[in-house]
Image 1 (cartoon, rainbow, N blue to C red):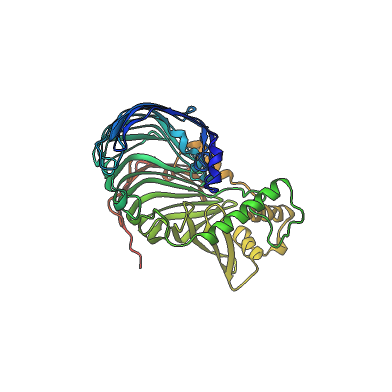
Image 2 (image 1 turned 45 degrees about the vertical axis):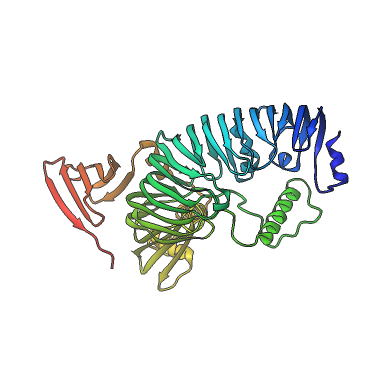
Length: 531
């Protein structure tokens, strides 16, 4: 029988494939006997097609014996799945169940659903499960093992390898005996927990997730390495609670030196007879807009959040002349669909380098809204010629905006001219005018930052070049622990050269010691309060 014939009685049932079956049945209606067999060839449904599965091949045979039947069946879906099921099954919901399932699943079966979000999963799942109890209330036992797994999220910059997991079923509970993964930087993640197999209650359970110096994100703008301890509890398939703590080891935010030539289509354009890439993009935009309009109510899975993100220091913002270090604490509440953030990362030190001129930031703050790309809020202020000039850096880190103002009020190019050359733009030499234009292009996203490239090539956390009365001085420093940094400074004079060590005793209290090439030494303690 062609399965497509089922549309005659159920037009909405989109089946394809062929059914071959035969049986010899005897006995009373409540005590049937006899052999049976069936084969489904190239079975496909709307769901299997949307999941990207190949056609499914199912074959089975058994013998009816009163209120139950023996069963020996196989299921194959290309390389995605290969299962064997043996045992006895009841012909009603209350009869005893005794089935054993063994086989293999390819974790890549989930990629069709993950691919639109830029995610990809790989690995092999080996199953050895037994089902007892009744059809209405089954009780499971056995194990499932995941090996050689990997997960990547190209959009967020997440890459996990060497994923392994061992799950054990016992009655109505599933226990995660062991689960681990290796982050891209060599750090580790692990999980353990227990889930009750109760669909009506939303699969209640508790899962503990821990990480040790794991690179959680690396997307070209944000690179985060952290220790974490999180717990997911409650009805896991509905609205669980995710709580715990994330201790940031290092968070690097790279402000791009250059912005893409076309970040998005110019506002106000109307496409006429769009074709090729333009037509595809417009179709995707219409589909996304329709999806947003069609979504109603709460999502099926929306965890409540109660997470503390702590970073006493080592939150670095670099690029486009910015070199700043921040620290602080961020509390994440709300839900996954609508997170509520309280707190942020405040500046510990920072400066903005503009064509050899160094401006210290008077204010600096890093916050996160609804994505992994942070928002910047920095202000650098200096006295330049006859004005007080300010440079304001704001917006998303991957597309920051630079604004210039002054007291008294001047046009932005005049403010930049006074910062760079301490004179009005009309009195600049041709070479200075060219430098002014190049610097303006850098702030607009079209320039380059040779200073930042030099810092990266040296492999240090901080690089400082100053020119004083005694000549130029170059200083570098690097963190050797979570709160200890070592610095080296070299200048033209012995008193301008030396070695220093800085220790962050607490969030506000800092200890610094320094020894100079001329034999001098100094120790100092500093305290900082915001008011």
